[in-house]
Length: 348
Image 1 (cartoon, rainbow, N blue to C red):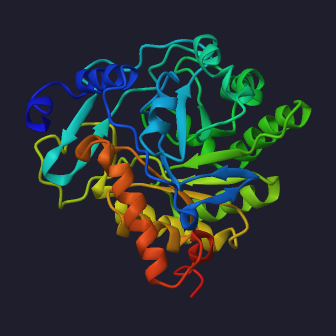
Image 2: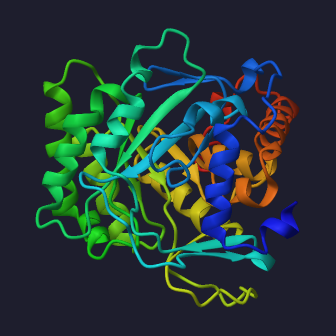
Image 3: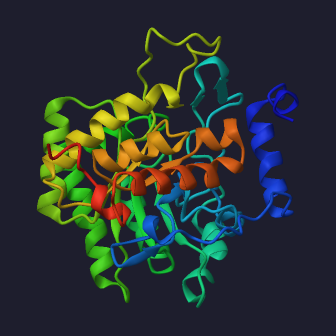
């Protein structure tokens, strides 16, 4: 069906996919979980290290269906305090020859109130199929970005298994400025303060951009260590365009994800792992479509990994394929568990 689907607008196809998931039209992954790829991070049990990245299930509508496909965790959002339409359509573009996607969605979502209703029952479930992440952002027209993040934390923190502070989307003007040392520290401490006053301990993460200078990387890592943030997601989409891109949509404005981001995001992953001295769990995302690439992220320093574009290009079967291949690669290298392989390439 791919040629037919790819003849349609990308955002329309995404909507159709959401409907298909809600209706249960994709086969459930009933294969037993291989314990060699199960792990505990932040005190949470991850049955598999592979998760769905933020942006796919913006309004927390299908995360339980994604668990059925074999994802060990799903990061929902990005959600903003107020509902917003996002940028004008069209705003998602496939780069088929490059196996990439450019988006300039602009945090389109239904807002915190609608979102909170979707996840309110999750934290009370006794037998969870996976780990639920909540990714929070700011409205485009907000005058105080930190207050938007604080509201998101206040209203959603206690129903999330972990929460991500998204300061790295290229599609909200000025948002990436919050990655500066001073602003990032103020933001993290404000959100940690909300967490410290809450009834439960929820791990807090930041999601960073791949388009950082060496000074940016050092300062972000120092802030992460100084504030005690629980994790870092490496990385969001890139605004850079390689001269190797061949698809007709390569000049579209927005963030580029998928295969073209793999090498750059993996290099950044190694750097952040070293700069944080392996003390902070990292989630590796960017260009993963097979077990070998997933394993490269683990060896570079990722405790967990996420995909998005590969799901679009390869369909739901990519989840089981990556997990099966990763499991075999870990065993081939003589490891009993995935945790033994974390950062082995970065610590050489």
